[in-house]
Image (cartoon, rainbow, N blue to C red; front, side):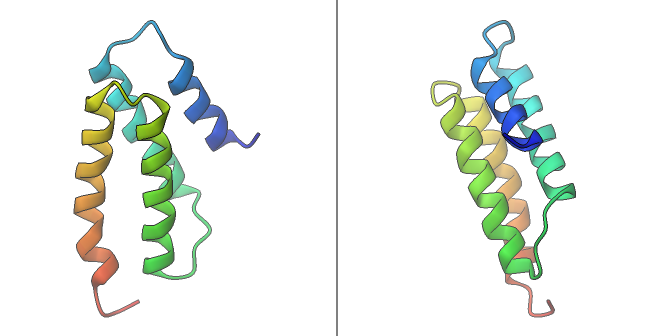
Amino acid sequence: MNELEVHIEALRRDRSHGASQLAGRALMIMKYAAGNANCNTKAEFFEYMQKIAGELAEARPAMVAISNSVEQLMQILLPLARSEHD
């Protein structure tokens, strides 16, 4: 299990923090993933980040704050992925 998977699993198992704290942690995991992404194009990076966002949302599906937070971040990244210059 790599470090990113460890972070996601910790989020999945955390039963002592509330939704807002876990949503903040999910965004920190997204930041970690972005900083450690090994992608060659913007499109590849966006696909990778979408995958991570999905994994985070699935980790705690009952906590809508997590899926909402990562989805808002992905909406910010979307125009960057669609830009002409790679």
